[in-house]
Image (tube, rainbow, N blue to C red):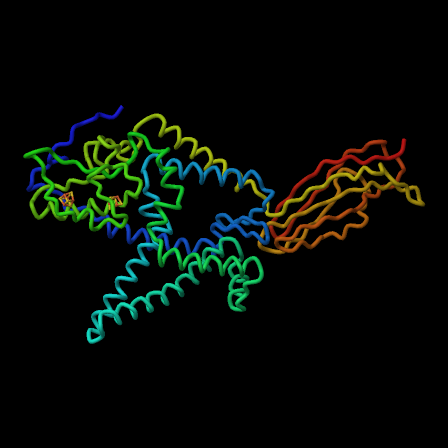
Length: 442
Ligand code: SF4
Ligand code: SF4
């Protein structure tokens, strides 16, 4: 159970001469935003994570997963679900403040608008204020339109193969599903970043509301701590409010739904109070009354947020799904072969008395290279394949179904003979064996 303490006027207890430098969350966020943007763009283009709807394939970590590979898809989805739940429980809205594309591009749009206005005001000082405003807005909207096409292209690339999508874009296709989705997403992206931005987070996005259900009294929060009466240190400069992208006054409550826990108000207050040689009044803390994130006296698991058995269990479940996913991926064969007997007719007999049994082979090439499938019969002397051209060529991403027969001379053949098919796929060098029975007349 966490120790609940009353906040002192100097919450971290430092003497003024030992004050730490102001914490730099703004620069940290901008660096993380840039990395996230690069990852967002790279994910679909390098098949790190992409769901190809037309082909019904899920690309994950460079592997091409088929929609029927239930085990891997199950572990992937459960892992992502628990990762979001664990991150929300431990670190609150760190996703919103640091990783969310809506927040990243919303802030970028605001910065672009401000810079455009500033540039116009600086270089065209002779124009009237109204003209400058109109021209700045026109330039901003034009730039935003180009950026919206790019962002929509990247977003739709998560669902449609990027080269295919580029072809549709260049031919101005808005008729096919992919082209139409691209056009609609471009329009929505433009409207979102032109007019909504952070309003989206507080009105449309369900994650903020979901977060309310996941937090508990140990979740990382942004809290304001000050003394009372004469001990009150806040100088009411309101810099913490001015820097907030969400328009929040964190001094009112750490539980405001608009607060995305970005930490920019912490940095702002640190800077103000540093000039007065006092520590800042806003902190990341484990719960409203818990220890500050930066208190050096905590053990490393507590500093990481591991504060109770519930958190350990959530992380163990996360580790379980991560292990399951790793095992499922390691056991996966690029070429999947299934063979089954076709028992509509038990056997047929040829003119020379030879016996034939019918089989059905289905093969999925989930790899990126064309494959050749070599099929042989083991344990059934003098057996011959009829209707199967071995090696069978299967293109990358292709599925094939082949009906064929196994033929054996009848002399000395038992009523039921056990044998196996050996399927070797090149260049993947995978071998699978399939136990079967061969039926003959009594
Ligand atoms: S920045 Fe700090 S001192 Fe200024 S109003 Fe906010 S909490 Fe008070
Ligand atoms: S109150 Fe502080 S932590 Fe919350 S959104 Fe505003 S700047 Fe970020």
